[in-house]
Length: 202
Image 1: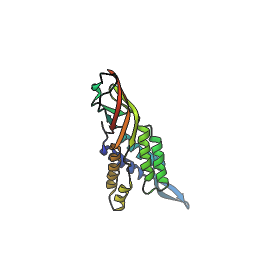
Image 2: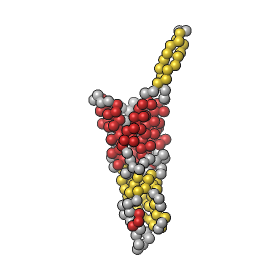
Image 3: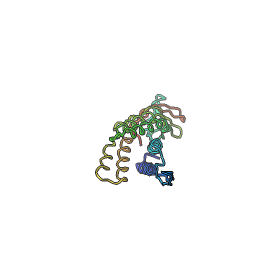
Image 4: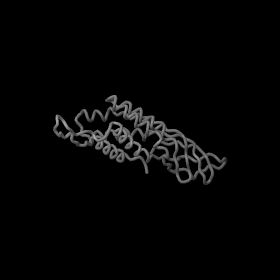
């Protein structure tokens, strides 16, 4: 597995669809039955759907071991080179991400700057542990390119369709994740060895 922009597009489309869902009910108004339509999901629910889309996408992230583990000396472990490790902690920052998205919605944060900051904080909190068959790595990831969502917003303001806006959002977020770098300490159980793991997210 690896990061897939299409998976993010599909997840955001589902979130946007759920955001528009309504429920019809009948209420008494001046003694008469009147049909009314109300939003099926709360703002908190919708923030959760968007967070779900991002986290589900991010859960497929991998890093690549590109250099032999230096220890033990003097026989570096070259068997680890080329191995891909999958993130194990993608859920860690989800609650904070959902809260940030909700705050952005409630404060009518038009440029979605809070969401940009929230995604960067989510990356730092969640990409801390990766695992392969016998190789693990623990460290931290830094998102070097902020996912500025004002550009997708401009697509909508310019008359773009919802799918165009979603695709633009996914492109920005995907680019930022691919530009993130994980730096950590790796270890291999067979043969026993340790070394640095430095990789962009894949």
